[in-house]
Length: 111
Length: 110
Image (tube, rainbow over all chains, first blue to last red; front, side, top):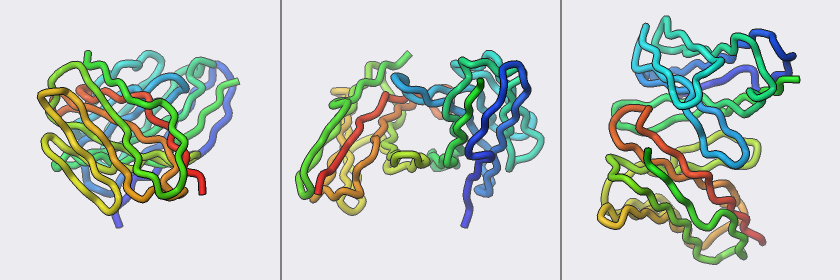
């Protein structure tokens, strides 16, 4: 069955370190997104991509970057981790029927 | 920017009760999504609708485009329905058009 997977599930890092969160989908979807989820907020869009070599900034993109070298993967990089980036991160993909598929999330703690 | 309001924020009910969760939004949309998130778990898409009503098992979702309002109903609720239910609206086909509500935390007691 097609799926979308995130890794790692949990990550603890130190302030200032570079961190990369992986997202891999086997739906062959062009549209992929990264969100963060924090208490008191709805899911907020960090970056998104409509296809290979396409990346776009979302609502809360500062301090994050993504790359899209193939259809399956959209890794999210925190260039220099900050405590404010402690959050739960979700990757999602969307097919032509507009249905959303989410990964299981990555709990990131920046100490 | 579309504002998405969900009510109630928290809901505790007894097993078997009929549950209604509401979602209101401020700007016209192309589609509305209902999502389910179990504690510590991932997010699952329940429905995507742009008009009318959809049903899947004990779950029913309705939308009134004119009133900018959607409801998610659960019939014969069960403890396994305990989760956070999230409404998200899209103003266009792109990801940048998705705005999420803060979620409704539902607990069904046996």
